[in-house]
Length: 453
Image 1 (spheres, one colour):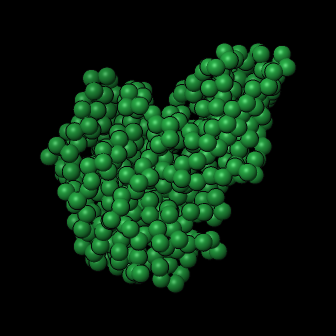
Image 2 (image 1 turned 60 degrees about the vertical axis):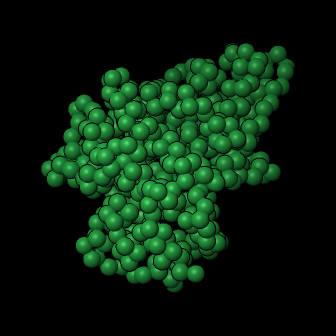
Image 3 (image 1 turned 45 degrees about the vertical axis):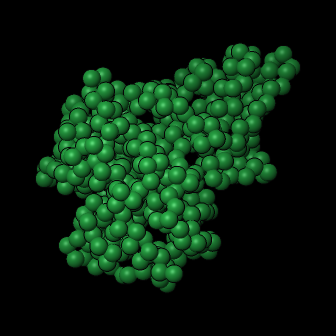
């Protein structure tokens, strides 16, 4: 099957009226979550640096740099907004590969504003980009765990191009050219986790998608059939990894927004640790645990999680997001894990560091991950001789253990408050919940600009 042509046809023909209502509701929830974390992420240094560079370019003022008080070109805004969206590692995740759609909202929002698009046009573009990304994730399920490629910047770039191409109204041939252009820009390696370059991957995906679609609209060419052709996208990124091309066969017939959905993250840190946080918090509530009563904590995780949560004694807030001892120590001390726990100062808290030294991790080879399953087992040895244990396979926020609408809104408000006043937060939420009724998204984008730093 000509998979690139199939994707191009799906994107070119995507229409709001063809999208199931359930898919649109999930899309709006995803967008609300991502806009919230982008507002909070706009205050992070990685986003600040991208914003500083964008401001310095003095580009055409057509798209909002979210939370930073100015506009820039769609290209530079998408770079800054994409970086902000992933800066806190708090954006929603998919059932595989973490957050492969991390740059998608930034791409479609930045370009839609420049085009004075409607909410329906933006939603259609988002759904097209999401579905393409989800299917590419299915073709290369081991892209990150064995290949070392970070999904937001690889398959995510292609999805961002698909969404951008839909906004620009490209026909099948134009979409195919945009996909081919993006394939040569896709990149991003897992080794850059716990640094500013990890969220930059999302920023680059957003910018890549917008740039590729704009180039294709002007007649820029690339190789056709870029996914399946020899030495094309599949072969270049898979090397010796299995390629499951069948994942693309039902594109347009079934929607992964419905079939597989999203996971809203309740904690602003690496998702591979969330089931362990859930397990510890359950034990804390059930037994009224206090830090001083704990002798040691052993955590069993799957191999992939073990390989990614690499910092036992973090020195920076970013490293803390990938430190199992740190996040579990915070959870035990405070009964929660929140944004303010991931500053450079917070990770050096003496009490938390001392407690973290009692926490160790190991691999359980019987644990199987996939389709939202990320098992952890937390075993606590108490000073009084008791042993307490809890296993969690599906972390909170997943379809098996969903966050309530109230909890999702609380998360949005917590994040948006980093950049907006409460009145503006309420207005933004009102617009986002009724996105399909907006004839022009610019009033929403004006609110998202927020105050200058």
